[in-house]
Length: 192
Image (cartoon, rainbow, N blue to C red; front, top):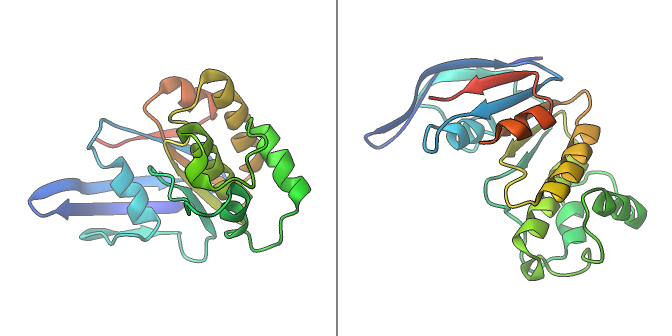
């Protein structure tokens, strides 16, 4: 089922972030959300994820969907290992071999038993991406999933994202047109 946003409105105090905003996220397709800083992209994702409620309008098509997310901040459990952070969101047990294959795919090696607090920003980002991709989901929502990654690591991570989101609804935010092309967006939604 497609996800439909109808006449959405959201304000924080006097600041109107989204006003009469409507769009469609087709099921099983990849949609890129673009816009200037402060335009409401992250707010839109938070509304989609049910972390906030709209002031006006409605969101249809999220009922019963299994959703995985990469947030703007990594939201990892600092004292747990990378492996534990990933395993905690997986309904089915994930083997060490599956984890090892996932780490290699995004150029992470020899880190999976280290506490997340000891990892660099780029490593933490990739752990966040893996956590979302390895969780059971119908829809994956990603807020700037590639920020802080060098070009080679970005390319490897994009390849893995595409592999793991085949036939899923993928919604992602980026500021870079190149990422939009590489992640093969079927559609673009501008948040003004």
